[in-house]
Length: 308
Ligand code: F6P
Image 1 (cartoon, rainbow, N blue to C red):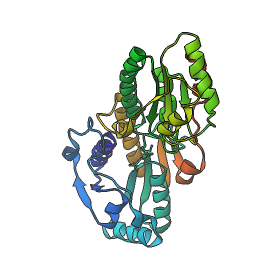
Image 2: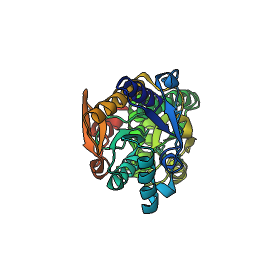
Image 3: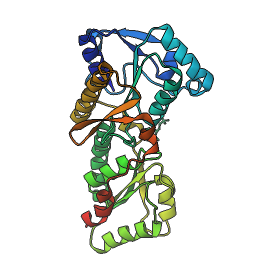
Image 4: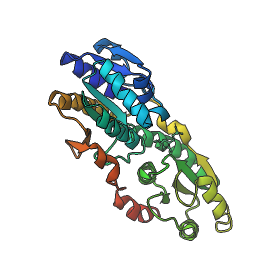
């Protein structure tokens, strides 16, 4: 997100905008937590994870009174345009705010490791999270192979299997367990048993934390009776969300941040900017959560055949 903030500030300053950062997410509007940002103030942040502005989940902002108050605060500060980076909750926030705040333009930028926002191929943070997970999984594989073990590795995704699907393919896993598709534990056990029969002595199974059959720990205990040697569990957790962003994330964040300013210059509002193929695209806020972003089907279809 820092690369995005940097691009917004630098391109905005070139256009002679006065740019303010809002500290702590939507709650920062209610608390009038503004910080003036000039081109130099965003130096040396492109390589840093997280956000220099910090963020949060504001319960007050979600209420009717909170939204009304936010609109009043923006008016009081004489803000002409608001750019917010986040997932579907952030886009809903912008949409609701837009009903009450008619004095300025609202632009969303997709930023979530879950990559589950409709209207962009990738959201900011996804590539970094996938690569963070891969580094860890490659290391766990050494133990799996040395000790001939089955590992269930849990990755983030309360409602989304995007991280699991991508790391599953990229780590050479035997199976991917995600909330978007039904999980058949007998079938999963069979995949492991079949691998043993063919002489493969270790297995890596990637589990999205929000699978309907349970998280990795729950699935491992359900597999106890089905898989003779049992399954080890490794939960990657918040390690996935931090650290230096990858090159892909820095480029995406910079491109989308710069484009958000272009949209404001053209007087656009009520849209999330995104990337589709190599093109920049705009999606109305409502579509970003009402339309479903699908996991790339080929990943789920090919995963078993790719493992031998
Ligand atoms: O939205 C990203 C995400 O990492 C989800 O995959 C995860 O379930 C959730 O955030 C956890 O967030 P927190 O624990 O900070 O509420």
